[in-house]
Image 1 (cartoon, rainbow, N blue to C red):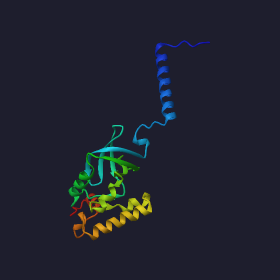
Image 2 (cartoon, rainbow, N blue to C red):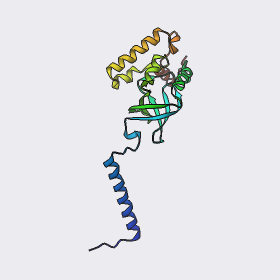
Image 3 (cartoon, helix red, strand yellow):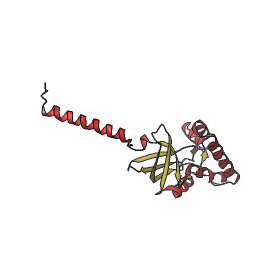
Image 4 (cartoon, rainbow, N blue to C red):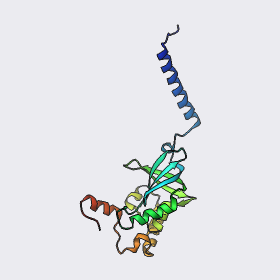
Length: 187
């Protein structure tokens, strides 16, 4: 016995079947719908917001906001903030980078390590004195040998008085934000 369907019911049936077939094809061939389904991808840096945040257009043409993992750069309104941003801009803006997504933060930004031709950009920001190693966050998910490498780079940058370490006692960004929230005027 055949069911008689109205034109509207037939249309819905065809749309449902098409959606089901499309989903099956994607599943069978493992086609990714973009970086949200992938931990690693490449893209071009289109903007540098500050010394540890960039915007990227990925290989699918989607725009991504990236917070660089394991580091914390001075805020834009903080001493060395503009210099940190300028250094990162010179290193990555307009260039193709490899993105290794580690997490997503509270602002829905991807927390990631960036690489250009294999070079760890996050590490370079610390090495050149443009960011702190964000130890309290990094100790949760940064591999131990990598953590030690970042620590060593920060100690060396401090010893050589590079970047933000030229100041006698620079204020860490997390302390700057804390003071700002408390209504104190950070120096």
